[in-house]
Image (cartoon, rainbow over all chains, first blue to last red; front, side):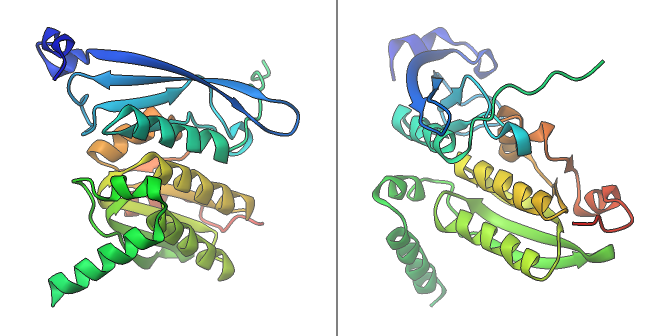
Length: 101
Length: 151
């Protein structure tokens, strides 16, 4: 257990150390840069059982079922790999069009 | 005998996975996935899932079940997650893929019984904004339109 984790008094505070990664998604039409933040929580946040959570900075698959690639695991590696896998598997289809007024 | 069978299935599952996936299968939350297929009113298919859903064979099995439904012209389905204790992000990808397949065939997918970790995961990935979630399979069935949508 690292010393910074003792700064947390309650799991609801969700104290976490952050790790930042960047990856280019290769797809037809050009490469898309994705930034991934992996949070190492001092204790699993409410509703989760694992301490590492990775989240991309933008959604994928916007035209069919838009969702944000994420990953979780027992290590930075496990969380990151899961998140990267979803970035690779689903197309980035641009920003969602604005709702007409 | 039951323990031996379970051990065989676990070994088989490990053999089917890539090296990067094995560590995940050895985690504490892994229970063999069971899928039961049922029917509700108006030909709505219900896939009741129990155990945990992880990358590899579990995800492939779920997608296979949806492809079987599509082959039998069933395009409206409910995933009942009441008995699911743990999923990984690959399972989220599988749910999205199944939703896309059913939608492209003119149908739809609803989720039911998403508790605890499952509910939290669907919210984190914002899948809950795209796929409707209901407390029970029967509540999800009520949300389907009366008539089957045309393909």
